[in-house]
Length: 182
Image 1 (spheres, rainbow, N blue to C red):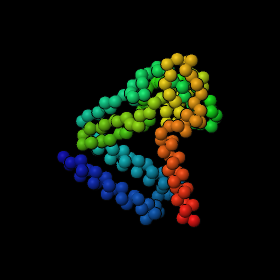
Image 2 (image 1 turned 30 degrees about the vertical axis):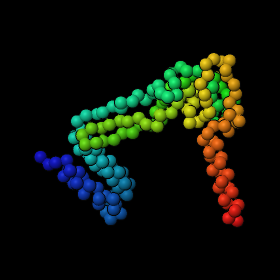
Image 3 (image 1 turned 180 degrees about the vertical axis):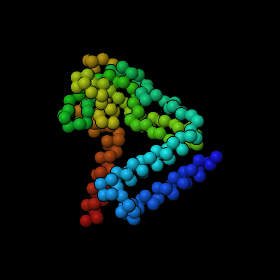
Image 4 (image 1 turned 60 degrees about the vertical axis):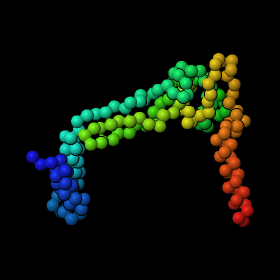
């Protein structure tokens, strides 16, 4: 029985000349040539995947859930949120923390195991007034203990965040360097 690598090598040898379609397209009638070639390539790639899949012995699921409680707080925590999107202006909404949600998933094949991993977790906030989930990375937000604590998140609040101050300082320094070099 041939080994997986030998079969895959043969598949690659079959695919190689197909990449140079112009050299043999005269063999096909004009109306069907490309369609036949596309179907052939599709079938060969499908065969390649089937060969690769024969060695898979396990599917490993992520240890982390796609939504989890984390440093941001527990699900249901009351928050104020000011989305960055222009359509919301400078309005601050009341919302409920859903938790930290995975923004992406990655699939990797290691040896004989397919592994799915969640990554790039970010706070997800349900904002009932606009019937939308707003992520922490697209807003300014903070926890509140009661609706009475709900205040507008102002530009001054945003300007006082440490990383905003750092970014503004770096931009000022660059501008100063540019002026000095001229």
